[in-house]
Amino acid sequence: MCEDNQWQNVFCGREKELQFLIDKWKLVADSITPEPQIAIILGESGFGKTRLIQEFYSWLSENEDEVQYWPRRLGNIGDNLKINPLLEEFSEQEKSMPYLWWGLRCADPAGHNSQIVSTLSAYLDFFALHLQPLYQTRFNL
Image (cartoon, rainbow, N blue to C red; front, side, top):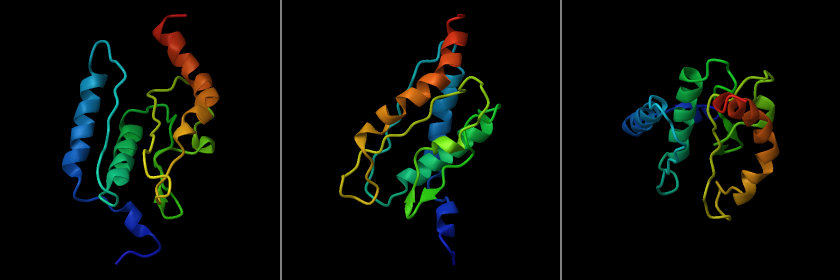
């Protein structure tokens, strides 16, 4: 029996879907000219979509982020699992962002997992500062 929201640390029944996301990540990461990709996770409320995303994020942060730019886990806010890290959890290091992670939750605004659609635009100034070293490296500026 789980105590004090320990259930939020349990991941089971979605290993196949997690491996699918990992395999797709590796396919893009190993390509000579990687292009941005979008993954859409669709399903009914309570089927583990956010938990799957959290596991993939953790795998990505532990295996693809050598400079520890991103926090290792997303955690929760109240009863809702987070799909994005908080700004204060980012590394203070001035290093190039190894990958861009930002999830957008498209949900019923009245639902328990609702998210404001303008979430990304609220962070554009933040991302611009962090993407600049990546841009300069990619285009040899």
